[in-house]
Length: 112
Image (cartoon, rainbow, N blue to C red; front, side, top):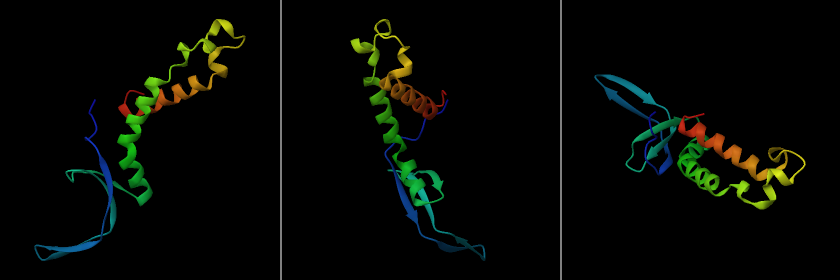
């Protein structure tokens, strides 16, 4: 499994331009790019909103991992399966949030 380019990433707008190569002119349309701090291209985005979201993805992944690691309601006495009439996973919103975080991190890491 490969790893992502190191962050931080940023969204940047490249203006359209034309250039000549071997007597032929080429026009490159304006586009949104996501780049690393050393200006390595990560990806091209369709629009500014996509570029901003992609640029934030490294920070979002780190935040999801930190939240997931701190959110373990099974250590709390109120979430003990033996004390509740219904199965724990049906009513515990912390466990549902933990499952969402687990799924998002697994998808980002390529282990889903």
